[in-house]
Image (cartoon, rainbow, N blue to C red; front, side, top):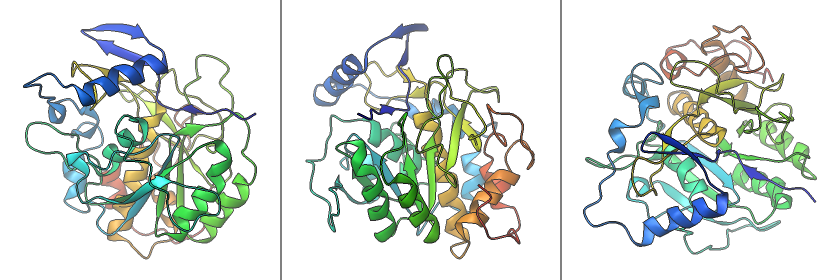
Length: 333
């Protein structure tokens, strides 16, 4: 049986100390904070999203060129998406269970307690809100949330995203074996000029196995980087890695106390998908290949492959948005 794991890690930081907690415990803690917040609690997220500052992804600089307007990004995950988050107001075009061969999504009740997909959506299209609220890299992009029940639903969910207007697909899941039909679904996306972005995985300190869908040909496989422009040691590595994006100490919007953070490539993939959305926002006629080529040539490696940990380097949205259109329109992956 194929098993999956969210590509967000389980290293939580609280008060400067590192704690190891199980996924179940994390879910219980974070869900509890949704339904029973401490009165007066405010999460100063804008000051804590280090990855958006001028020294890293330079979101403000990117927004002078594009905010992702007109681009739909599908978030495929094995948790639901909470469309009620104020930072996502007006951004979620649809969300729910992606049943096999479905033409419409089956409602999943909003899944307020299932945070993994919501984090991804917020990193892509969150539009902040005063002194609190998570800000995404492509705040005017739209989100299509596809809730998997098992890995067998992934290929049809990918096809659903393609058929329902997504130009970019973000998948923060890893599978040790290829789900049946996944390669055909990835080819289907490629044939329709849809960019598929996937997390590399978080077992870099252990088995460091190649994971799917990141290992599928044509998929943008995203490793993790830290605040200093180095690779995150927990990230999977290998020849399949395309680029890297921030993965370390990402603030958790559902946490209480608000100092809780998490590290993992679950966050690297949506940030990279957001960069693709920014590019399509000002180049709607570009092929998927042109977008991917631009992301590669403007990453920190300058178009050259750095190594199997960072691939072609850490993404650089401002450089990508200022780059000329690639003459070659094919997918380099």
